[in-house]
Length: 361
Image (cartoon, rainbow, N blue to C red; front, side, top):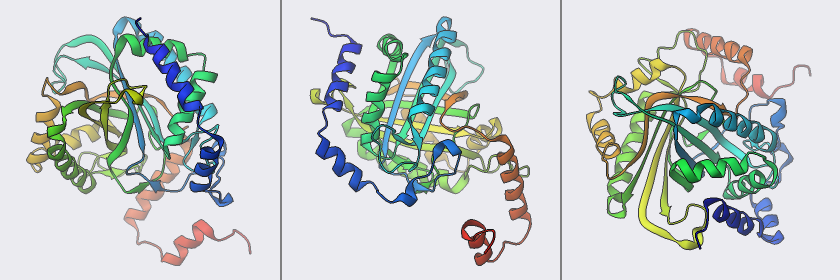
């Protein structure tokens, strides 16, 4: 009997939900019970920087006919509302039970081109929707799946779309490389510019690509900047500003939603980058001459038809995100950053008091 994608997914939800109470309690104990870690996400308080490498990374991509655009847009608008209502940013809670803790969530939408490296090439007639989710812990991924299936009315339609149009499924990934070892969670904003790539390679290529991506990480850290949204004097052509960067790695599953079926023997890598402006994409590619080995290596593997699964090379935009942008605070923060760059830095004790001293004694 043919088993549908939705049925396989539902089976996975049942398996996830069968986690014993004792295992949940032990996970809660392991991942923090300090009251000081609990920051109310709904109040918009900025969560503290958190470790990034090795954290769970879910990447799911669909190649959808353009005729379905309005329908899929509406679906991801509903998905975003569900994420806002049920998930929290960073360590806003002490555990993931009932409220998965996010390091990042966004959906990138782009027009698929016949030649992803040539912006002037003809469209294929399809759109790419890339879902990027990063979690504090694997239990958060499991809770995300359970909550979606139980509480979100759009879940059946999303499963139907992934069954028909899914082209890359990496639910078991980890963040292999990142812009920083620790970073503030959920900095990606709606309308940020996206670069999204995915490959599946033979296991024999793993060591070679691990070395390539380690070199790529060093390049990104040396030449790019993180955040700093509204700094009016920043030049993205010289130092592109990112709101997210990670390379994510996983063993390819035979069935993306049933790990008991094992692995194919291949390895998946996905690159997820979001930029403050289009000029940041131009700035990123302006480094080709100064860093030829990195660019040649990445282009060779991600354009190999035997490996490539999807490609958005700076042509997409974020259409859903976990962050709710406060425009005024971004402008104030940008001006403050500009002043910090222009004027001498304050003494360390002054910076400490800004963050931790009471307004009145």
